[in-house]
Length: 367
Image (cartoon, rainbow, N blue to C red; front, side, top):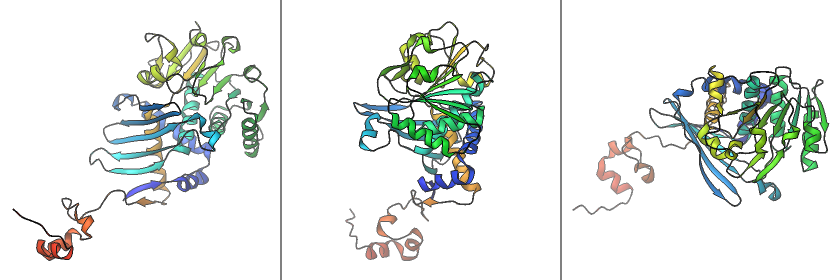
């Protein structure tokens, strides 16, 4: 039997912990795994593109556990009443190849993306950052706001989306949290939202080379958390922002980010820093309060590995295990065919081969 976490399972886990403590704990797991970056088998995700979107597989392994995530990105889905992103994943034991956990990752992807964003900002944003602009107020925006509020102490959120209903939805959900020291301002444009912000998070969904942020919007000391650009031909930042002399660009995994991130707009030799190097002290996250820092986030498999391992641990700690019969359990590992005849291996030993054939009404021609 394989452990299983579905939508009700993730609701139960979050209902017991709360979204903010869950993301804080997940960020700690991600940091722990990034600190042993060299132990992981890493590769860019495998993507199949279509005019409507993308379907991807994201695998990684540390030699003990293996994980993969299936995830799609279809920006036009909301017009059909469907989610833009859905996902599920598997955590497996490398020694046997047996899956340990099959889990939903649609909700968890939003949680891990926000946890990763806030973790990166801890190392890159100014420590006195208290105002954040959220450009793009769709399905992941609440998670980002909660993570930055609780993990970095952001107190004011300036919201903008081309769809005013999305902004109103986000404002309602943030208000429902009942946080007394949290302020929300609805803005009429990107420029209005960005003005005076310490951190700017872009979460737009359009599959195109969009220019959401332009150079004149960027002030010294800002931290940019670019999340929406996550596939070839899909970006959010004007290329001159990346080229700023005072800008520092940090990515998750260069070979993937060069194809899918904001840096796809730049020459292959343009210098960037991998986040693992920041964590282990090989490179700074920020050199000065005036530096502009950019986290070019596309989502990497290691964070999903951390999320699946974290979920597996939480489910077992809560003693609310649920399992599915995804893998057959056999008395005789060589008798897989016994599943089809309805006869287990122990019965086969008792009856003998002739009895099996008789009871299953199978005739064999032996030559």
